[in-house]
Length: 306
Image (cartoon, rainbow, N blue to C red; front, side, top):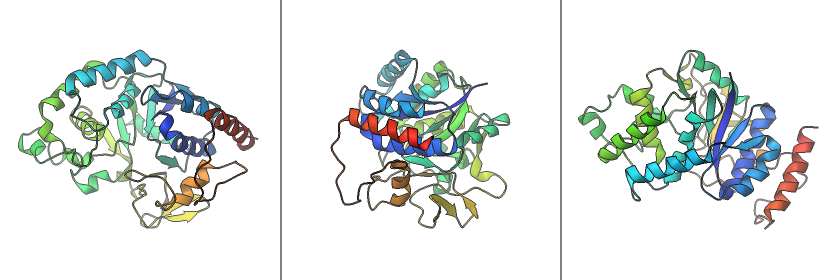
């Protein structure tokens, strides 16, 4: 049985992708990582990430087919960022069990081990999104029309970190879900310009009964949102005093990662880990060509791995 991690990225999020991959490799040198291109502009980030064992998703024709089908079903104006749906290629890739991780995340453990929960469940997540109710996901119409129950929505999750099994959602099932959602736009809360999160929540809550949010384990689990101000830094990791546990990962959802953002020094540590020159926070990034960046990353990767 194969396990691995999927990410989506294009050249615009290269810096975030570097930080994520460095954090993954600190705790796990070997788990394979596959890049699902966010759009056509991914060749630079793909080459930059090669030293970290990142490969490009094998079936790019499927990703194009998925994008075309999405456009056929929803049209041009339904979503703010329709390319976020490309992450649904996870279901049909090379790994029997997989994690999907957004690039605005860094991890603080061997994160792939969370897939051990799939021995009992078919889908996992790990966040407290549900505590905020249906905001940014659904509207009350989803209850009024009987599409979901309030009990279902206790399993609402953030679409930036989740895991599951290959082909659990068939391609036909995926397109059926798209069509059902397009027929009922009143179910979804897109007021904050979320794109795929309401739709993937609807699909999982409707079609995957064996699901588990890791924060519901005995003793709970630490938080992981960068908007939570109470985390304590300990040796380049974070600790949640409310659960007395170290964080598994930190997600800057809703934040631009830049000097002054929450936990900036944590992100900066992983981004420049192993590099001899760390820029000052008030210094604009050096305008280097992407080939220079590749050479720098390869040198850094060699130092990190001895």
